[in-house]
Image 1 (cartoon, rainbow, N blue to C red):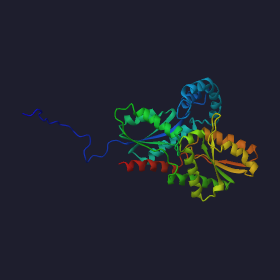
Image 2 (image 1 turned 30 degrees about the vertical axis):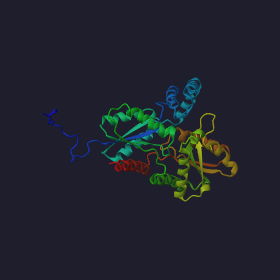
Image 3 (image 1 turned 180 degrees about the vertical axis):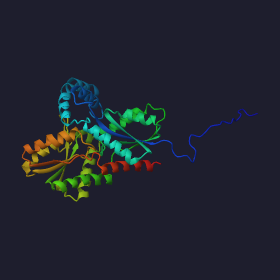
Length: 344
């Protein structure tokens, strides 16, 4: 006598072999973030979140808590609010406004088979919020594209942390694809090169083209972060694409914070030294930023320009970030599409 009797269950399969996939492919575009408004209280909230990230500040937590809350958040928010007010637009923060334009344009490029969301690592819209929107839509595959061409632990790595923190609360974790850099993608290099070429055709060739990347503490490089090498590679690939001599270009690093040594050469110091060396005509761009923001519109386009001219420079041009240029949108969409096709 059988111990178990087979039963017939009338169960419909989730998908039939002839069915088309019901779910869209989810896409998360991620960037750093921005304060809600250019005010001291808003900057205090934003900086508290940003500077509390252990990927950004690698200092013992208890010691850093006292420095952050006892010193930095008492002084820096007011100064930062003034800087943000100088670039704020009717649409709000330039970074957020441009990122939304990128989201809309990439959605149009990819079409109805994809659902493209925007999430910021700090501030709003949060990465967790964007992921929950994709969850609500029932996506079973998510492609995460941090809009940092060069991988760095404080940016790309931190984005992964935020994605993982949200997904670990989900019962059904979707198939996940994380694009950790794209600075050596041929389409990206061609697009970045086009922006430089267009500037040269319009303004003439400068004595030096400065590729200014966001800086980081030197010890991060010594600990194994590839960011410095990827920045150098980006400059070299653009230089080769345009047929420029290596002496035509300078790679430098901006936006240092604190007293410890950061990646060198420093952009501001370099600009102050060049006129004394006979270099009085420069063009500068920042390939580390996919969208213009405070660090480009205020620090590079205004503050460093004034420093260069004050030191004896004569011509200084800022080449804008790629923003929502059609060719930039096209290569980002193609990057996403190629990942989706490679896993289908």
